[in-house]
Image (spheres, rainbow, N blue to C red):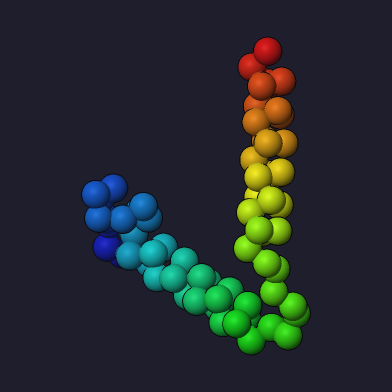
Length: 64
């Protein structure tokens, strides 16, 4: 097991980094080969903004 520093990687070890890379590549491959219709950029951004807004409201309630 090779340890990594925070300057080198967000992962603690090369094994963790390699495992994440394999998972990420599998997710990308699955998305690229999917026959589901894509989401237009504006719709995707609106969905993400809604998630962010909900999270901000939740966080404010926790600190109040």
